[in-house]
Length: 220
Image (cartoon, rainbow, N blue to C red; front, top):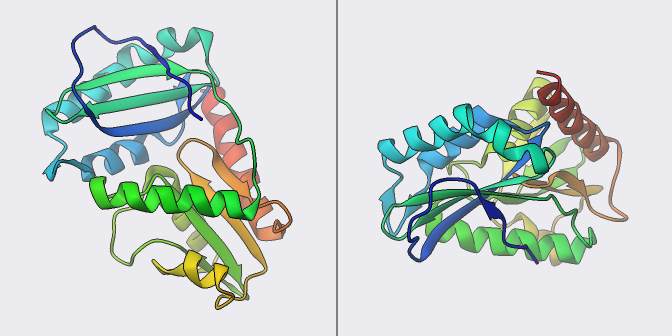
């Protein structure tokens, strides 16, 4: 589904990828950069936390080389790859919208993301549900959140909305045990994606807020 991206950092022999982060760009800049860096620091590869030296390397490339390197794909995707030896590389590629936003397909993405979280500690994509006057996010209580998931959690609370975490929310929704009015995917790569046939005022508001953030990043 995802095409290989064009590397722009110095060449070296990369080992077996243990972590691949896909982050959205706007105007050649990284959207929610601080949040992505905090989430990267909370991840681990083969049971080891990301080294401070690697985090400094990533930050240096974001500040010094990302904008000129992204001239061909200023609205593209930045990939940060960490191998099983703790080495890292960064790549750039075009952004491709999801081929399907149906609820079953978004469920599949969320399930794949949960499996990734078992290996790296953080799910890059999460499913959200609007259940009456509250939001339910399919993520374990107390776990670290991805960059965009943390953004939506904070935005929801700033709007005065109640946010509940439940690692079984997707399963409950598919079994009919969670009666929801809206459903949407929150993704580091795709932003806020309302499920086809299950959009509404809440998910649309979050989607618009994310797009406004992208616009503000472009204007910097």
